[in-house]
Length: 158
Picture 1: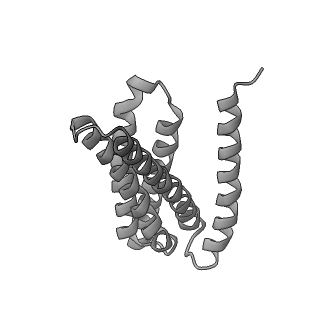
Picture 2 (picture 1 turned 60 degrees about the vertical axis):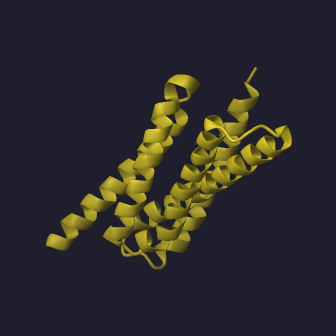
């Protein structure tokens, strides 16, 4: 019998794939290459997912803290920083997604920087959760951004 969370993950990843195909077709209209359109679509999707997850995390942590009437402590501050880190990474990817579609190297660097920050955070949490899928997703996206940066550098020299 399938685990419930495996099914939930499969549904979420399938929805992301369908959204990526739709957004790819939208970005392709204004993009200078298919690679940039693909990177822009994934930057928008991952940015929205990460940003919304960070917003939900921050709201849940704050609501729990307020309802428990516990004092402001290190654990609460750390949980707030975690949510803000997710919001920042997601917002950075959403904001630069259109510029990535146009082939902007600056936007690719901003997205790669935000993704490295997020990937480092997720990798640091790996020993606690033993969940490799987020590391694979963010690592693959970072690889896509690096390929787009190399592709852009190669075509600018010619």
